[in-house]
Length: 426
Image (cartoon, rainbow, N blue to C red; front, side, top):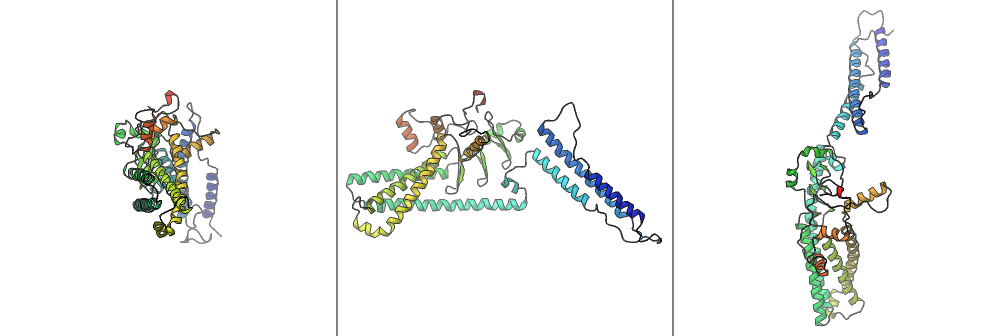
């Protein structure tokens, strides 16, 4: 016969479990100042965490009292058994307490704006994730250097083939040869200049002077949205400083890039405010060079002009391959150039285009929601600089087709918008 104290204890624990199962997690008493939705959610999280901790402690206390009581094997025995009954509450209290503490800590961090919803940022919280991401970042930088060397080799081979094979093989008159020579030099120099500038020029990062000039920097942690009318959007959890509007953090360069478009491994650099025009110029002239080489080789292969017999016989095995490769590259880069020309004309970046389309879909409106589209002319000038002389064909030709060392007229902090005057970033 089992002892009555043990049986009564089990019944009490079962009643305790039933009571806890029906215990309300949180309850808001009526007050004169009702909480708004955000404050109510925060209060609910705190109440949930505190209630969980109290329930866990209560379960642990009941379990300890239960296990301290000995088990009498029968009513006739005067000596208690050395065995004890394991409470059904054992372990549950610890789990409830730990779960509640973890939940409470998470919401405390979330309220402090130090928790980022980015999957990459969340990996930095663990030591293993930090090591993996740091290693991946350095690997990408090394890979970027390798890609730059590959690009230089490929461009050099392309230039060599044109000037050493395609141009001499045309076997044309002197003036025609001179025209194609000068055109080839112009394209080659334009490609080289823009590529070097893409690699060399910083896309623009958050100015230290701007951060130092701000008052109450800690209040920037409370902002999570990019709103026209403000010269900042939110706090960067990786840089631990305010992030200017239209800026994004690059996890490879490990900086916040102004008006960031994307990180390009072929450049080992980000494309942003100060080097976007060089990137557009590079891919544009590269597309022109590939299509031009394709046309010149095709005219000789298909008999539109009589090629030099010696060069044609020497390079006949390569001509078809280079022709197909140039045509494919030309079509690809033309499409890519067209896309970036569209972004420049509408004053968007690749990242912003995706966000603008999502906002338009959510608002069920046609087109895209882009507050920075201030007109084609002004949009181009934000990327390329000011044409001199202004509003002349010569000025715009110099701005777009010749080497351009002008910086963007915007500072990367303030951007004019198409919103009413009260909503401009000034």
